[in-house]
Length: 52
Image (cartoon, rainbow, N blue to C red; front, side, top):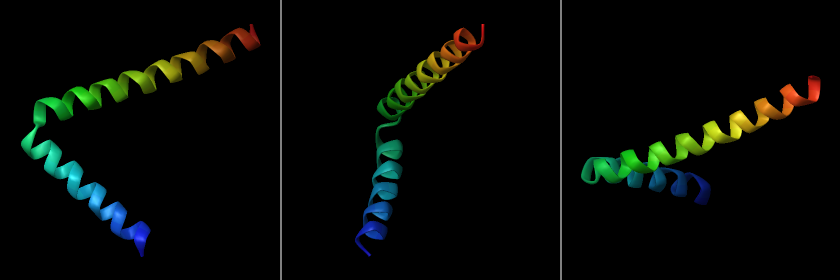
């Protein structure tokens, strides 16, 4: 029950944040996306060097 309540609270906060602070939300999502891309690039480089 607590997990479900926290999940819905997180969704509500996300919607609120995007609705009232769209510029800040966009910057955060860009930063998260860049971090994920850096991690993916690192894994790709690792496997490329492992096989080569």
